[in-house]
Image (tube, rainbow, N blue to C red; front, top):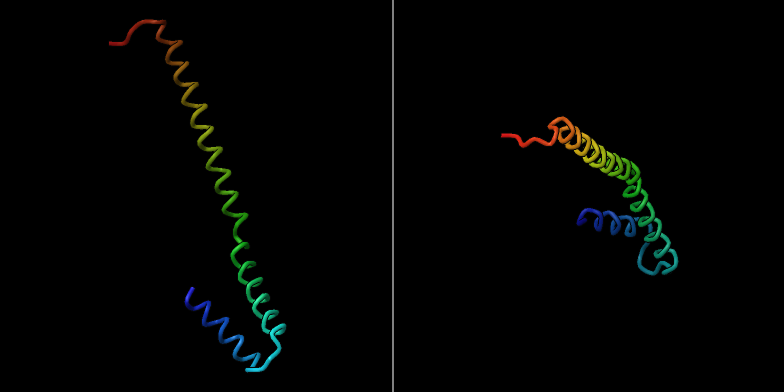
Length: 82
């Protein structure tokens, strides 16, 4: 975060000098912000895909566990295991 502040500060210092119109400075800050948001959002779809697959794994594990439990119940013929 600290490096990002220096990057934006350096960007502003190079492109503008004291007395530059505030609108130009605001535009430069907004453009730098948009660039950072783009970089952050670039890999969000990958994370969403991983999260979705983890949910499917959990559900599949639950279904397999229930099938095994009912299979065990069916093969035990109602007898207690010792």
